[in-house]
Amino acid sequence: MPQKGVAAYISDDSGPSAKPFPGSHVAPEKRVDYLLHKAFNQAWTGPSLASASRRFMKSLVSHIDALEIPSEWTNADDFFKLFGKTVSSSVTQAIFGPSLLQLNPDIIENAWALDEVLPWLFRQVPSFLMPRPYRLRKSLSTQIRRWYAYARQWFTESSIYPDGDGDPFWGSEIVRHLQRELLKNGSRGFIDDGCFAAHDMGLIWGSNSNVVAATMLVASHIFQDLILLRRVRSEIEDNFGGPFSLDDVDHKQLWRLPLLSSVYAEVLRLYVDVLLIFSSPHEDVSLGKWRLPKGARRILDPVWRGAFCVPWSVPG
Image 1: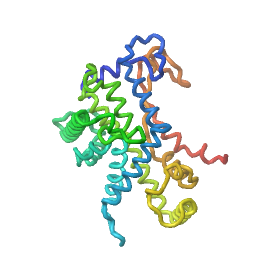
Image 2 (image 1 turned 90 degrees about the vertical axis):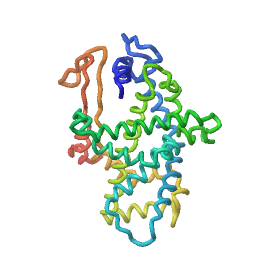
Image 3 (image 1 turned 90 degrees about the horizontal axis):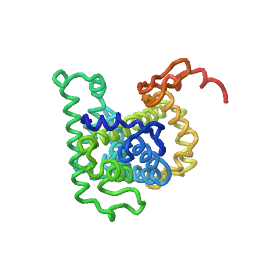
Image 4 (image 1 turned 180 degrees about the vertical axis):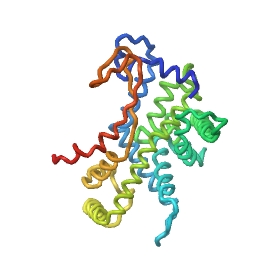
């Protein structure tokens, strides 16, 4: 992200809640943390989440059909590439709409290529030593800004789908909301298209990386355990009957399948590792036997708690 965008994020010490932290003097229109938290909370709950889930299911069916998988057994050299691209394309389309993918047919490949080299960016290895991560990041930024220009040219309120959330240009209400309220359609001043392309790049990566990996691991564990495979298939057949299409499946019904849900929850517990960055901008705080100084930032890795066997081995 360009430095002026980074500065806007760092200087916001008002917190994620509607009421700013005491002592904060950030202008309401520059409360980036709150604006983002509010948008994400609205997008990933209630009607917005339900609409996005339906769009995802419809898109997933379309992308699977496009694979033209034959009825006989077929060997795949890299199942993750086949699996990951299909799910990633569907997730991205559900959030950002079909126009992003139509304008940039290789954006999913670029996003996963960036995922592979992100550790080098995190380590701040200079571009003259390792240029590929920087080329990929620049390419993705260019693709996203191309989509911005197209969506601004063609989107109208009548483009919004009957569900009130999706549309073919911006994709979803959360994206439209952030364009209106945070970016101000490119004229906010302290955050411009270059800055916000970095934000949307992160949203593409964040909405895909753990989801696709976790889904892949769920499938892998189920198919490797024949007893579990039979139990999962039996649960699905009991709830949905004989042969059926994903078009006919209500995503809420899938959430209610206890065995399938427990497999997914166990994969999240064992494998998903999301680093949490936190800070106290206005006062020192105590964290058990540690003290977090005012303004300092710390990273918490919760994966050890999920993988710690003792609490999970106690019945109940």
